[in-house]
Length: 297
Image 1 (cartoon, rainbow, N blue to C red):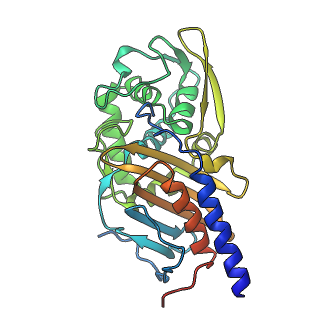
Image 2 (tube, rainbow, N blue to C red; image 1 turned 30 degrees about the vertical axis):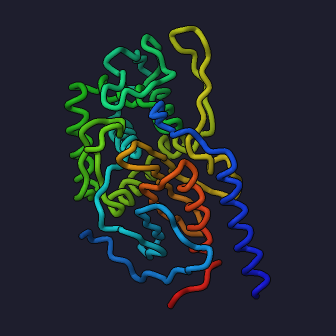
Image 3 (cartoon, helix red, strand yellow; image 1 turned 90 degrees about the horizontal axis):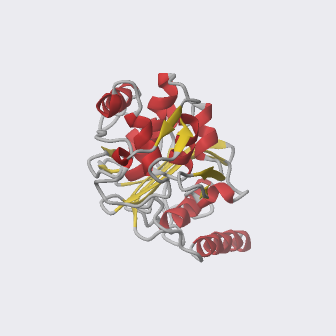
């Protein structure tokens, strides 16, 4: 038994080290008291199981069983996790996803002055814009989706907040579609509800877990985009919904629904310091669910 535990613990440590071996650039590049009552909160180990993200919530969606929580009642900026709500509004609005939209100067980030490889003048379908916004956290794509929404940007943001209330996100607020503003905020419990809502949309599942996509921009050159969540390229993970995020005020963030031990598990990790901490925390989370760490209780 000791050998088995030690072996699994070492494996988890090696996974974390592997994840940290090549730090991913901040994906936005900046280029890129609730009623969820747990049936039980299980104990957590001191040895090898420390979750370093400031805020964490790990919950089985089958029975609302909370496997781990940390600062779960806080409301924080959520950065590009906002794009899940952007995607939910788009997919449920039934707008024409095959309509061509064009990136304009209005889509340039004036909040953080971040860069983008999606140059002004690039034309793409709304479907492609949604893919780039979810998979690669492309800010101009997300903004263009909102700008070209019936009624424009202000109508889109209103719908984001209406949608949030409709799905039970009672401690959330959205002021724009990209997450670049620190005024886009939510609680961990609200983010679980957002994950549950997006999991019902096959297109969001497909796009948020896609690995890569190439598009020819207005300068005539193909640009290759990859998923900002490196775990989608790891065959050990069965991920249903995924989104990363980063701005300075939010820290590094990761939300997912992933199957662990045969259960659909919502994982919320906010304000991790360092580009790979959230991914290493996700590895530790899986070991918590698998009871690889001894309980304190």
